[in-house]
Image 1 (tube, rainbow, N blue to C red):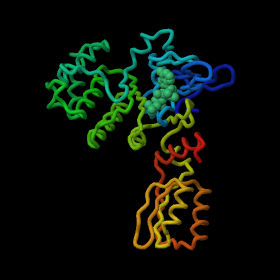
Image 2 (spheres, helix red, strand yellow):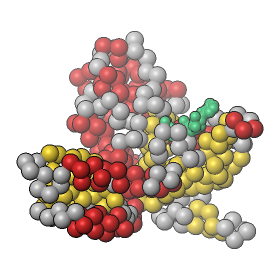
Image 3 (cartoon, rainbow, N blue to C red):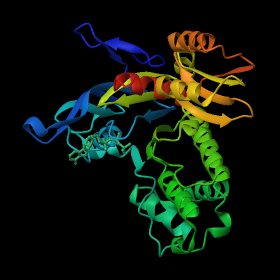
Image 4 (cartoon, protein in one colour):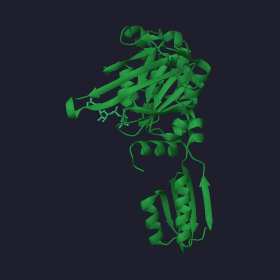
Length: 337
Ligand SMILES: Nc1ncnc2c1ncn2[C@@H]1O[C@H](COP(=O)(O)OP(=O)(O)OP(=O)(O)O)[C@@H](O)[C@H]1O
C-alpha cells in the first residue's frame, strides 16, 4: 500500500488512498489484448495512488505493461476493468474535466511543430492547453533559460539537434502549466549534462510548484535520482510500490567483486554458470570477477571458493543500487533464478 498517502476505508474493509491528496488514483485496472488462447493480459488488476506534488517512477522490463497502463490512464486505451480518477474526477465519466489537469510526453518525444520556432511551440502548446500565452511568457522565458534553450528561442525546431529537440519537447509539455505530467523516457537521447538539467528542473517544479510527475524510464539512475517513489511492473502487475530508499534497504541483492590469483579460467566459467556475472577481467595470474547474488548465494560463493582453494586476495562489496533491486525483483518474478 502507499506509504505517504493517507488512507480511508472504502466501506468493505479495504483501504484506498484518500482522494483529497491524490493526483491520480487507479483502482483494479485490467487490460487484455486478443481473445481465447491468444489473449495477453497486459495490465492485470493494478491499483495505486499518486500523491500530489511527487515524482513516481514506473519501471519494468520490456512488455511488462507500462505503456498500456499509462495509455489506459490517459484514455488512449480503453481498459476492460477498473477505474481511473484524476484529482478525484473519473476519467471515463468526465474526461474533459479530468484531462484538463494532465499533459503527457510519450515515447521520449512530442509532436512539436518543426517549422515553428522554439518559443512559438511553447506559445502554441500553452494555447491548446487553454492558457493565454502572454500570461505565461515569464514562465516560458524561465523554462527556456533552465533548459539552455534561450539562444535557440527564435530558431525553427527543425534546425536543432536531436537532444535540443528533446528539450523543446519537454519545454512544450511544461509550457501549458498542466499540474500532472506523464513522461515516458524523458531523458532518452540527452547528453549527461542536459539529462541532469532536466532532472533538476523536474524536481524544482515538483518542490516549488506542486507538479506531479509519473515518469517511465529504463534509465535506473534517472529514476533513482529524481523519483520519490517507484512502481515496478512485471507481467502486467505491480510487484513493488515503495520509496527508493525503502527499496534499496529491503533488497537482498549484493554486488561483490573478488580478485584472486587462484581464479583460473575453469573456476570463472563455473561461477558464471551459477551467478549473475557483471564483469570478468583477466589478471596475470588469475582474474577479477564482479557478480550479484542474494545472501544464500553469497554463502554458496564463499563455500565454492574455499572448496577450490581460491585465496581471497581482494574482496569488495558494492552498495546495491536501484538496478540491483530491479534485476532481483523482476528475475525472481519471471523465475529466472
Ligand atoms: N495493441 C496491442 N495489441 C496486442 N498486444 C499488445 C498491444 N499493446 C501491447 N500489447 C502487449 O501487451 C504487453 C504489454 O505491452 P506494453 O507495451 O504495455 O509493455 P511495456 O512495459 O510498455 O514495454 P516496453 O518497455 O517494451 O515499452 C506486451 O505483451 C505487448 O506485446
